[in-house]
Amino acid sequence: MNNFTFSDFEKLSKEEERLQRLLKKQKEGEMQSPTASAISTILNYSKALSIKKSKEVDYIEQILN
Image (cartoon, rainbow, N blue to C red):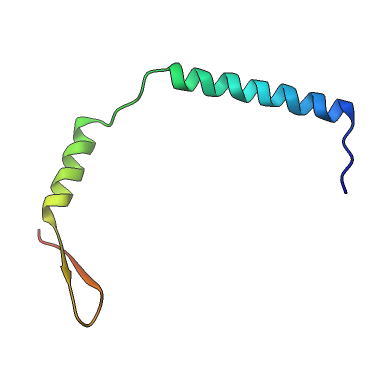
């Protein structure tokens, strides 16, 4: 069984407060959005991807480009 001193508790409390402040800053900050290039790449991939159900294996995935 671990024994914690008041000093240990104080250190943990301060670290928790620091992490809470950091989290609050991140939530208040601007949300980053993907670049137009990333969105275009994902959309093009989804258009080229073909997934078919198969009797022998569950699914067959193919890139049609």
